[in-house]
Image 1 (tube, rainbow, N blue to C red):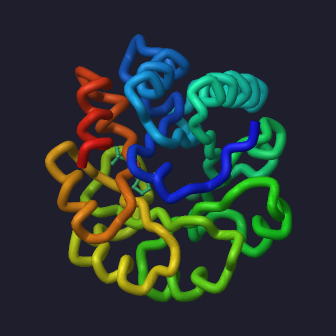
Image 2: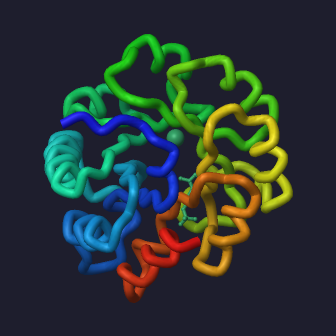
Image 3: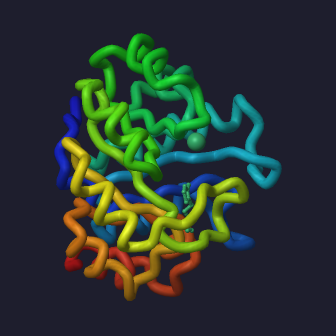
Length: 215
Ligand code: TZP
Ligand code: MG
């Protein structure tokens, strides 16, 4: 089955890896709960010293996550690992400004998957606007985040609005987003929000995801 990119998938975008889990929780069951609740995209981002997986386990996990996402017709996006994305035939790859060079990523994946790029500055958007293979921009951090140690400066809603104005592709907001921020983010012209802790630490995943969908 082929799931193509559509800006609607940015509406309720969940990002998670084993480093983001609360104690005694399991990534596959958390993602299944989130899929049942209606997330529109899932990004597997498993990295750093707190990941619970080695490379083989990460590949197996990505394969299982892809099967699960397919059951719900939701695209799987792999963070920052073209080879892993290709091995599991993911629908998308997401790259940051300091990850692998974006043109190299474009050359490697060609049209086999869509590409998302992290941007926190106008200049980064302007440089990427002319690259047709880039489907969307992930913009932030909007607010301070506990989930990424080396996050860029916060841009707040005012910074997000500026990026929306120059972008020729849809934007998903990221970073420190809570349930109270969701409608203000949509009002900037962003297509949706992408979150780690809001879902991974939610006491009611179903309610949290419904708020994203209804924002
Ligand atoms: N990139 C910028 S902020 C961030 C990433 C991966 C972390 C977002 O996590 P949270 O818990 O939703 O703030
Ligand atoms: Mg990255």
